Image 1 (cartoon, rainbow, N blue to C red):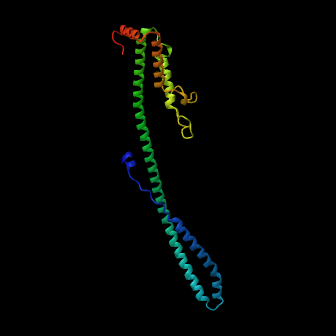
Image 2 (image 1 turned 90 degrees about the vertical axis):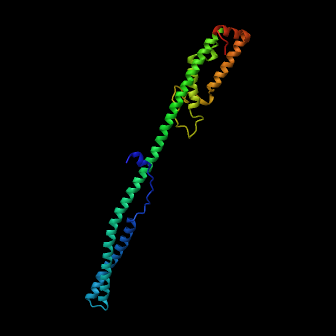
Image 3 (image 1 turned 30 degrees about the vertical axis):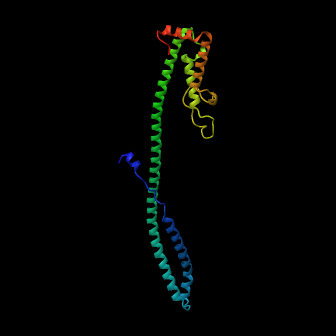
Length: 243
């Protein structure tokens, strides 16, 4: 049977109903009875030897009781051996069931981890595509900005600037924040920064930072020249109407 088929089987937990302890308690009761009868035997035997009235009947009854107890103990001890064997077999079944359930639970969790890893890989691939598209758009914006000389530094079109913003974004979205007792042991998303050095709650989303930089850049440029002249220069530079 394949391991996966084994794990898919439905198990019913065996009920632990041990028999040996019950039989052992009965053995102890019978042994106590046996000791009591054996303690009476010397006096009964003496009474018989001294021809005490009724002594023979009492000794005969005592011997009968002892024989009955001996037979009972023989039966109980045999039963106890069998009960031990059955209890051990039941315990082995219980351990096998517990192991199978734990293994099944472990397999489910590992499968879930693997599925989430696959989703993360796909999401990272998409994130890289967006990152590359952002860089491309920033390069095109820098080229378009030649109509005005150099763009302001805070236009955030430089590769290093954008990389730094992405690093900060990884901290902002990848670090559990605020830190609580439930998430304090959750690792930060891998990156060059961490919540140890940076307060994720104080970071501005990258989209907001870039939108603010765009607004500032446009306001700066339009404050230097009329917008019509800006559009004319952009058209002359690119050979088409600027979008």
